[in-house]
Image (tube, rainbow, N blue to C red; front, side, top):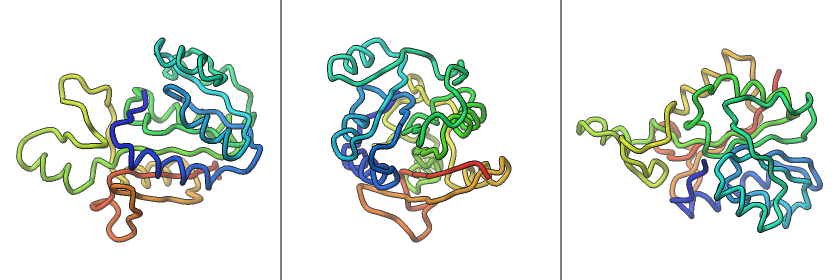
Length: 201
């Protein structure tokens, strides 16, 4: 599911995620793609990593690079995983492609002691301009055309903050980046990629 279109944001994504994970942790990466993030975390933090992926090509890539991976559809939920069985559960740049967004986030909070969620911010100013011009946004973090996009539930940073408040989710940390640089001023307008470290209250 993960989109590697913006390599600058992607590497910054990795670095921030690594800073939020403890050395030797047990980590579950949902929609892990080809396993690149898990490889990075394994090399830098010696994590015990497991991935979940449904795409056959990505699954094969994971197997070839030695990533522990389970083939399953996230839309079916995480019932196969026990409560609090991972230190961290990650959903990186996949949230917007989920049909059952609420269910997967709540299931992540059940399975993980902490969770990390990252997604393209639909409130980013360039997206707003394209909407104003009468077109669906196409950008580095949203590289698809309206007719072939896997994205079904795009949201803004403000939307996700409200989601967390309404579902009794504690925001431990939030980072927002654009072109590999952190954004602190007006993040819902100037930030293209939102990153959250969360836990259940």
